[in-house]
Length: 102
Image 1: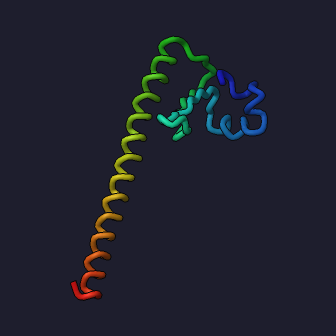
Image 2 (image 1 turned 180 degrees about the horizontal axis):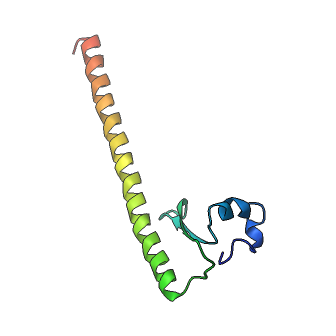
């Protein structure tokens, strides 16, 4: 939105942004490799402004970098959870061996 005060999508919420002197807002979803929205990258300005070619390049590069960071974070969390399950499974197996006398 190049002008929050006149954009119909901000009709019910514009007063919230304008209260903090936010007059323009552009946002772009960050979509993972499975086509799921992971986050939204937003840029706000204290003056009305439409994105130019340079702004669009910054947005495109920023969202690409954030996609990599967020996906790596998700993968690291999955690896950690899997490792914990393997450790728990090994511990349960050792307890079972003790219980049955192996």
